[in-house]
Image 1 (spheres, helix red, strand yellow):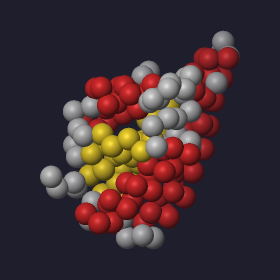
Image 2: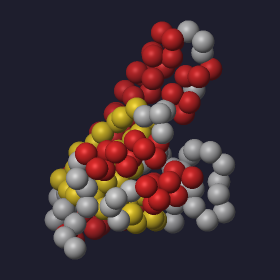
Image 3: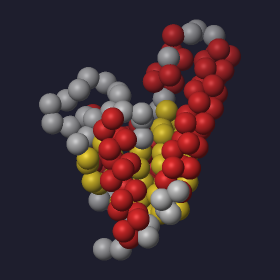
Length: 145
């Protein structure tokens, strides 16, 4: 199987950082492209605390701007390793659906993600988002611990 496009969903957790390192190494060896994705929900950025929709919108805008700035630095470090990389920040009602829909729309060959992230309660074997992606993705999924 030729892996041309690798999707690496990241959330700032140590597991997603490890997964991104693995994805980068794979991309270097296979001359693949990496797509970094941060998928956001209003609940994840604290916007649900506010009853004013304008405040919610402003909070999400600032959170997306912060994510884009952070991802720009990550992109730069990966490019220095000779890997073609793009980053994306999307908003979705479901993180799992956001990740799997993005993977489908960009025709990725492989999803590389951390076993646990920053959402929900920790599960014994696999985090809820990574488990959901494994169950719903049409592409192979590599889970990194």
